[in-house]
Image 1: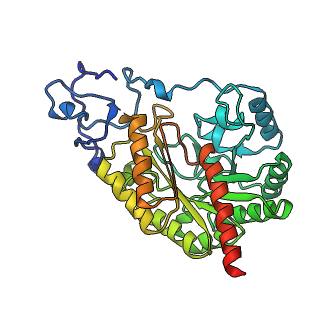
Image 2 (image 1 turned 120 degrees about the vertical axis):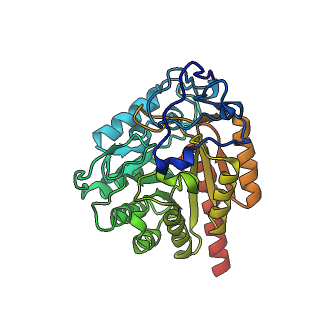
Length: 367
């Protein structure tokens, strides 16, 4: 990664942006946005404080982040099917780099693989009421009302695909009294009615911290409750909408685990936004303290020039370190890699087996 050495130091950031101040980090990474040659922060690999958005014309993605454009017959058929049913996916709306691999059944963008195609269905429309600075999904204070038939349409479609595991997610809907929890729960119940053996994961918003809404969804027949903490404590206000929060996310995950025996919980952290190793370790420890089972870690990629800049490209070797470290803390599974996302195909295959084992253990203990 080339540093923009010829450019003068930029102006200082707004006061609340303290999480992005220059500071050393031991993490091996490909760094972006170098400062002046005389800068001590440049020597440590960090840029001086800068505005946080816009493109750096000298920033280049490393080779390990380059993906072929999605193609292949399975990809085309699934995209056509979702379009006909008017169902949204986070794969498309959030510009996921793994769409070719997941939709083609594990063979990468081209299409050869094990044939197990996966997609994450996005409920409650394609427009979010929040404005997180990392997310590519459309935003509005007044999105269209939810489709009352969406839970049934989703269940019928997913059951017809013959899959054994499905992930449901959604935009934030702060305009709905329960944040959309009831809509999620109705979809889960419809899926279980049409196919009782299917395993359902819900990757949810925080429902504005409404723990009754969390409990209602957790008790709907759900198998895996996922909610993303997204980033370390010090950077929450920079990265996420002000209505989100570190403690609020921890409370959601704690409630989901507490209100249903055997519930599997899952969360995710983006790297490359300016966090330090010690902050990542603390976030992992906080998640384990509330018995979160599964963690994913992936590289943040800037969707547009209006979103947060990438502060570093973390190497595959460093991601391997975080996987080993996380599993040493007691996570039953850590998916960690530059292209790993919250809904990650390899992780979902592991989770499916783990959930079935836990169910078998509960049945055995009750008999």
